[in-house]
Image (cartoon, rainbow, N blue to C red; front, side):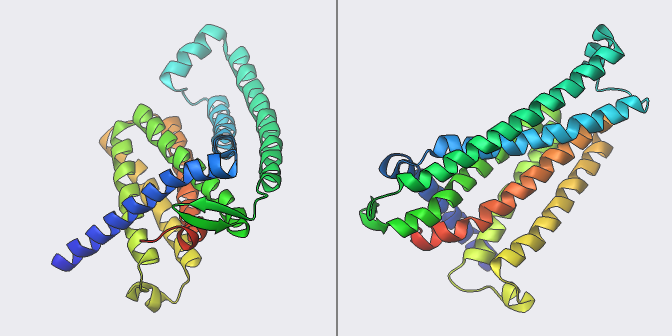
Amino acid sequence: MMSILSKLNTAVVRTTAFFSLLRNLFPFFNNEVGVQVNKLSFFIFFSKYVNMVVMFIPIKLLFLLSGAKNIPFLADIEQSLGRNVYISIMIFIVIVLYAFDMVAKIYKSKIANHQKTIINKAKYHFDNKDVEKKIVLRTYNPYCQIVSDILVLLASILVFTLLSPHYALFYVTVVVSYFLLLEYLLFSPHQTRLLKMLNLDNNQFIQVCNGILYLIFFLGIVAVLFVKSIHILVAILILLVARISTTSLRTIFTSQKALRRDYFQK
């Protein structure tokens, strides 16, 4: 029991320290280096959520066209506008979002390419240490990726809270547990017995855990459906949001390697 508590405490301390590092790296990349962290991270985040919405609306329309009932508050809108007008508006929204997403991706690519021209000093300074240009070049993008993924997780918590508070609580519990578990298994000073036994590198192990995590999220939705009746379209929306959250959790951990190697001292 003491061993488990000790391992848990170690994972909590290291996870807290890493998030503290992320906070400290923001002024470094944003001010010292001049990387447009806010813009780049936002457009990565925005693209993920728009893709999810663009995927959800057609599914909703197919359900509607098949004769299934709409979500209650949307059913009121449909009734006031008329079925044909409502469907036309939904299709128009999908087209607009898709076009906007394409523009956002192009703009994001331009911003990302522009950052390389900004990073032109031989050395930068972080935490009273010199950081070489090559290190900044290989770490600014993973940092922005992690920031965008954290935004995805926070937005997902908000969406789940609005759609199903029960699932939001379940989601937060699973995500926190997942962070602590992978912190201990992947980033301990020594390789854990589990990784030795499985003979997997970190990225392979993250892929395996990610599949299990998505299954857990799905089972959570099933449990919520049993505990509290929710509309099937709401359940599908929760599943889609859980899917992009799972992807973000994967990239959070795969992007950490460079940051931990070059900046993390714990």
